[in-house]
Image (cartoon, rainbow, N blue to C red; front, side, top):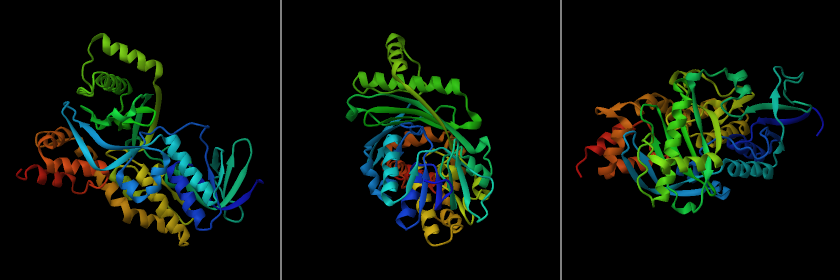
Length: 407
């Protein structure tokens, strides 16, 4: 590679969004440079859940070696729980495995991959091409610049403006050991007093525990203690043969809990990340494309503001960008994403505080799970929500209709 090598597209970031975009554009005949600046073997901090909606849209994801999940337990802030047998399973991946699989697909399609951390120049060259440079040497030029390097993308800030803390969420957690994965339950527990949830996602060889909540309400000490209580109860329940995991912030009891926590502290691997959770006004004003640039996935703010789930939107935004690029009009990507999933994300943004707010005299998440324990129609709605097939546009109306329908 010589300095100044020219490409049709420069893509910064080799997560799902960047790699899938590189694959699709390269298959269309374009010269693509994909830059992966993460240290070797360092995976993005992420729960790794991929909805059945995404698996149906892109079946090749199953080749990445995820763990399919056919049952999930939902827990309310008050400690009530309901187990949902899913009509269609979703999958939980190690992000290291998923990202590697997608990156190799891009390489096989003809994209050139550079394991370099790069930054984009503030100015284009004399021929109007974007220039990216690596620290310590190396320079590449391209007609179109794509930012797919996450919520903290410096390129996205330059092209579309910085996002305030109110448009960000925080996810943090721990990866812990797992033996006998087949009987490890998948749990989503809504937090008491917080707009967010905790999760236990068993992967093939470990469990990903985490908490996601809004950044402007973040209290690390309190939430970390809450997560450790949740983790300890999860492991104790497995040791006790699957007894109830109790409240996510329940009181720990005695020496057994201390012993479990001590073992976990010796083995747990910590992770943390910022993820986008845009307000409705931000969706209205923020652009994700221009004539020769585009933002994909988290860099564009494309994550569900209620759940933080972003892999579906990473892949779909890449697909829409590739269609626009190959049709010869990168700026049309803006219209495509808004028409495709923009309205749903904006509605989710409007729903965020209400989802974690009041409903029929109590916390909506409490009511939702209590109704689900006795109403098959509500359980069906929650199964569809977990699968990604039930949107937020009519969620409360659907729940209310099914909750009050006669048995």
